Length: 328
Image (tube, rainbow, N blue to C red; front, side, top):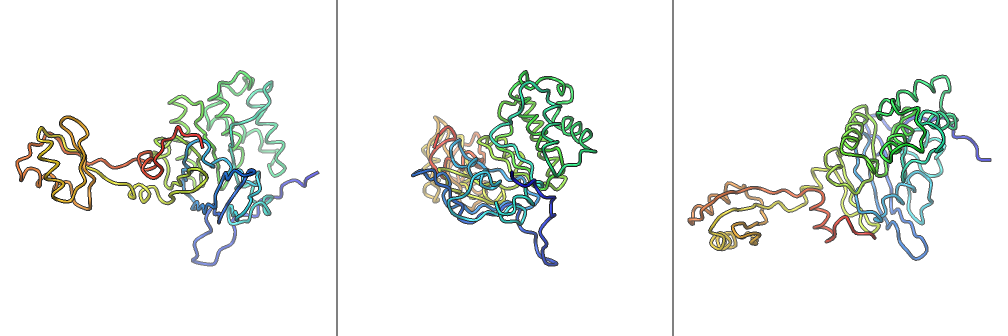
């Protein structure tokens, strides 16, 4: 029988004045399944206190990476550090400090939500049974399941099952929360509540790693992002820096489309007609006021002028040439 998890050793010590180790760091992390390369030499870095959006279409390698971070799958090659400790060797010290919801929750169908959490908490050798009831009720309240806590799990909707899984991950204080597609099955209100919960947890100092294919949702809550495709980490960093790597464009509405395109091309812009009275031009490092002055100066009649900055999905498509409905 495996030994029970040890009590948390606390954060790894760092020299005075030195920044703490990232919450998650990998080097050359690789996983093969036979001849298939599921994860291909990625160097992931999740800063402490970040909400890290781990993004990519289904099948891009996100879940396999997360399973390696938690010691559920051994890497074919590469190294993993979680909370400053090597994984999976230090799993006994690390995992009590990590809450996780991976590939959807799994609970006993004939037990209530509350009873399922009670069994889950009792199975954790590092939790204090004296505080179990209070912690369970607090976790249920935090995910909005108090009213349904006495209902059998088999009668829960998919969204309620996701909420119970989140409650299970929050049964005790954590330093890192890992969520794999946490809004699957949730209605818009439930999705907003999860987004608010992630923000609240981050405000309390928790590091949150959220894997998702819903880029618009992650863009509203993430401080940092990593973009996966076909097992490779394509981009990574603070959200603003990653988005700034995309191409900003200006949309011009005018009845003088041909004259406007000729004018912009002569000034070094790459412009294309996108409608009967509309064209779009990639913007170099020049303010939009200069574009307006340039067009008006040659007699172009303007109906509208707008700067369009790429969102995460635009950037992903630009980098990979594919959308998020692709199955790798």
